[in-house]
Image (spheres, rainbow, N blue to C red):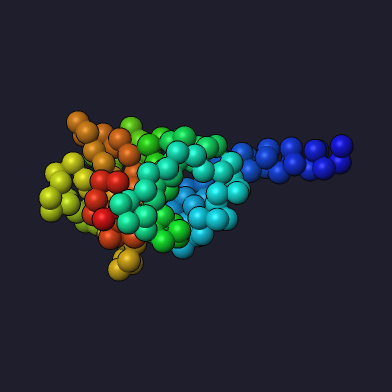
Length: 158
């Protein structure tokens, strides 16, 4: 009985913490750039459906507990997170916000992607990390954060 109560308390605590998670250039909550696949696969509700690259060096997995969160792993290490709802950035932006709000908050740091007009990149001052906003009809439809290399493709696997 004691073990069951402890397990339930850990599950409830993890859900409560998720409400305070913010999207930052290095990820979301425990889903941070550099975190290991093995650790995230067993914690935080686990990982669900996966897509593997042809050489199996890159995989994209959906969080079981947070279905609006996809995590890209390169060689079993987090390289990028994709959020399609439920979380906001550390600056308060979320899915559904306008491009005008994005421009107001980030100003000159917002740069259009050279090949994709509906991708807005936010320069963070870090050479390796960035945030990308996918836009549709002037609104944010998804937020991707992580390594710049993985932000150059739609799904994160080069």
